[in-house]
Amino acid sequence: MLAFAAHAIGRSAAARIAGHLHADLPGLERAQLMLEELLPLDEDRRVEVDVWLACRVRSRVDESLAELRGTGWAGERHICRLAVASCHDTPSPEIGKEFADAGMERQAARLHVFMDGLTLQTAAYSRNFTRRASAQSSVKSCAC
Image (tube, rainbow, N blue to C red; front, side):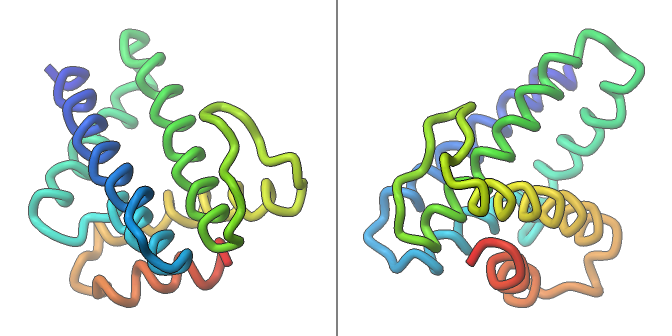
């Protein structure tokens, strides 16, 4: 049941992110909107983050969730690469591929770690975060 729910939220988030990716927006705004999809900034995304965090924790002891954990990590990294590419107005690498530019790949890696921490913090301590502060800090500090 947990795996089914995790797959469903992954598809939903991916569709929303694709919509932002293909929108005619300035790079920084596009990056921010994509990254916001990873954060519990409204009730729907709060449920998604709760399910995803439960899945990640459970995957440590349930090998049936190992593939999902790996796929989720790769998907999150790709979203971070998309955000970095949007900020730099450069093409993003294909799914599963690193940037040719090592500096941009380091930015994507730092952004990924930052977003994981921000997601956990906003899920656990939602009263301490606002939508604007959470998303803007992620883009400005890591992606651009």
